[in-house]
Amino acid sequence: MVTSAKIGSTTTLTWHADSPLELTRIGSVNLTATKVDSTTLGSADYYKEFIPGLLDPGDVEIEGLFRPDDAGTILLKTDMEARTSQTFTIAFPTALSTTTWTGTAYITAFSAGDATPEGIIPFSATMSIVGKPTLGVTASAGMATCTIVDDIAGVPVFVPVFAIGTFTYSIAVATGITWVKLTPTAAAHTITITNDFDSTSQTITTGNQSGELDLGAADTVTLLTVKVYETGKSAKNYYIYVARAA
Image 1: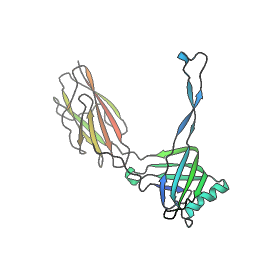
Image 2: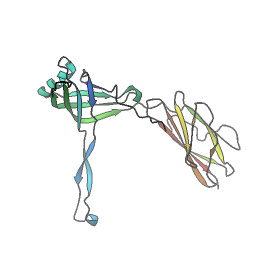
Image 3: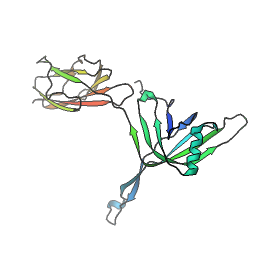
Image 4: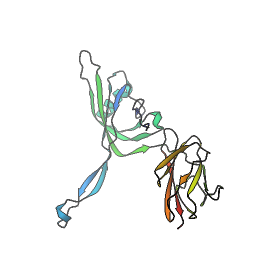
């Protein structure tokens, strides 16, 4: 399997209207929920119980090369001293599309230094997020059309009618039907069809017909999952349940 993972190079941070130069690390946004103790005298088997409380977006640690001539770096210190919150945007590499974290934060730590004879002088800062940060992810457009044929009818049908924004379908076929074929259309997308009956997958080009997708025995339901995605965008999955009569 070829991984779709990407390295962090070209990730950027914008603080208010400035971007600190020569960053070497942008930490993660860490969402956690506090645990509120709900244990009672009647809690079973002497186990503690809890319910989730408030959400904490945490702190984001950033590191870079110290540049006293860089306004973006110095602004972090200035805003810390002024106790001024600012908006921020963390933009992930373009290979991951326009995926961003956005929110508001205070600077609660700033450090410049650790000078050594041959080492580059670094700086670091801590952004403490206030309120809810937003993770923005660009979604793929999805399938425009999809037709289905079986091994008896041999003509394209789709009941109910396919719609790009509808993601689950149920189709009934006669007991004599042993396989179907799909023809999905999703321009500029990678299209993969997975058959849960035999755990097989097919990757096909938009507008082309798949190979035979075997169905389970009579009186069973076979799930066909059509995954479509554009490069660097989140995938859309369409679920087609094919019920074979008894």
